Every structure is written in structure tokens, then in C-alpha cells.
Length: 140
Picture 1 (cartoon, rainbow, N blue to C red):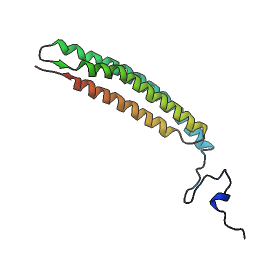
Picture 2 (spheres, helix red, strand yellow; picture 1 turned 90 degrees about the vertical axis):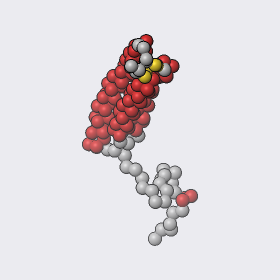
Picture 3 (tube, rainbow, N blue to C red; picture 1 turned 60 degrees about the vertical axis):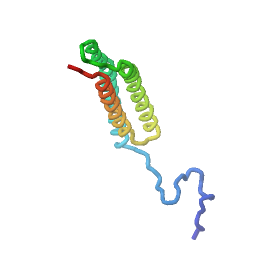
Picture 4 (cartoon, helix red, strand yellow; picture 1 turned 180 degrees about the vertical axis):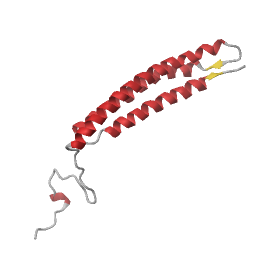
């Protein structure tokens, strides 16, 4: 019978602590399915990000009604949203791609990262929509 191994005697490759289990890498058919799903979701992310970015730019058309009598507009807030919104969408997309590729190279599930990125792009778009809508007040 061998003596119990103390934490200081564990090999350097054993990174599990007490009460933790080692993660098993994604292999075989699950890896192929994850790779395909991640690539498809990243392509959808790119399309949605492109549409959301242009949609945020087109939100600036809402400020055309600012010259009408009784309407008030916060053009500073609207300008910040219209210019920063597409940048934020591009940043979310870039981070999604980077983290997905990192997880794929480490043989971990990556499709949840792509789904999270898709949700984040949609949240950024609707946040920009709400901010622009609050910047334009229709009077009469």
C-alpha cells in the first residue's frame, strides 16, 4: 500500500485541488459538432453585428424631427450613441471571436461563447435604441 500524496508532492501537471475534478477535453464527434456549431454561430454573429451596427447608425435619422415645433432633442447623447454604438458592437464581436478561438484551441466547448456574443450584440443594439429614443422627445 502506498502512502497518501500530499499537495506539495503532487506532480506539476495535476492542477486539481481537493474537491475539484479535472475537466476532460472535448474529443471525437463532440469536438466536430462543437467546431461546426461555433463556426456557424460566429458567422451568424458577424451578420447580426453588421446589421446592428448599421441599424445604430440609421438611428441618427430620428434626429431629423428635432426642428419640428415642440420637439426637443439631446443631440449630444444621440451623437455619442450613434458613434459609440457600432464601435461597441464591433468590440463585442471581436471579443467573441477571440474567446471562441481560444476555447477551441484548448479543446473546450466554444459554442456557448458564440451564443453569449450574439446575445450581447442584440443587447447593445436595443440599449442604443432605448438611449436614442430617450434623447428625442416628441412634443405636439
